[in-house]
Length: 532
Image 1 (cartoon, one colour):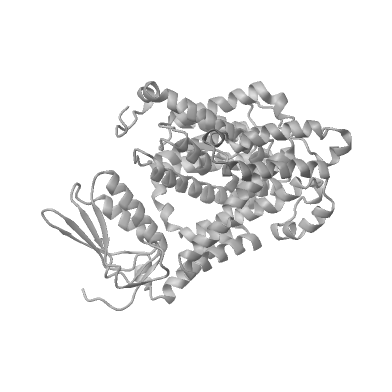
Image 2 (spheres, helix red, strand yellow):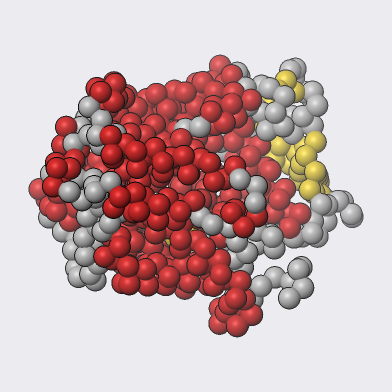
């Protein structure tokens, strides 16, 4: 196939690209299997039900997806919410089934929101607040999983808040179980060490699968299944894969406030993560295809309904596995389908072996994921965008850790609004942007007449989509008093979309603005008034 020819969709795409998509789906499934088990276990679900989500996300959702290259499945970013939901519903089998009722209702709402085109509102959340949220989730994941990696009795940390879990780490170190810790440390060493090896063949082997195999061997050598370790529960109890109806909706009546709160949290954070993943993968797509966010939201919602009914975790378009799909040569939705099929084969054929997986190995994988979410690179990137964005990032992260994720996110949103008002944003411009259009014979010039911030940038996106097609577009920001970081991120994606369609796109007018930092996407503030 010509490198510039866009891969076909549907059955024609299967005939054209099945080799590439099958190989990529196979590679992604090797990554997905251990992560699905670990994410489900950390969420308070039977581990096998994380695999159920990947199966539904691959075999069902791929038929309706609005994105060609994203992989649907459970996400580490939702562990904190799912685990909290299960715990507040009483934990155990009861908590799991009541949480499933929440997942199903969220799926229904996502389908409805997809038809209502709500996906376009994803840009109203400040980028730095979203990254602060993800960093907090990473820290929360680490704060719990490090105790399990040390071999501490899980019941001793049950119900602890993140800060308490962090303060408990020295105590857990003093009471570690050596054999379990050895498996965890070897797993961490492999996860961090294998990506550093430059050999191209080594790079093709998923680190998570290597950890799974090595940890099983170590677990058997160290006899972790012996009775003396039973209290620490070192071996995975995956449960049995079944397609029975498991969701319980009685929580709507018995725990109304809890039910509604977690519906809102799943709906907000799960939907936001999924839509942002789509946008990120669009930028990696070799053929520059653009996801249909609303269609994809309908597909994910339908997948959550089915997954929730059957006992699975909530799903999203997962960024790490989707990136692996791109890197392994996936071309169409069939890669996601093959990924789901291979995962199903694994659990049917290898369940006895899955029961030999040490919990410490899965904890190591989740710690690795958590460190990526809350990495030093995230802090450096936030700082590079300017002090304002770093403050928003830190406020969001800290408030998520001290309170809960919803309060944390909205704290970041409020912090950004306060900063904008201090910088001179007028209330009338906060939610309404103004534009002037000058169309010439060979060029289109759009002038922004107001501040451009995260709360009004959606109007610009709609405006740009309605421009006359084919002519070069110049976007003049010289009159804008403020152009914030989120707006510049959005403009960057608009530029990408225009160029993918073969249309020239140019930003101008920021040379007389003061930038929050030297970063090309740092917020810009006008130094002095401009005459119209």
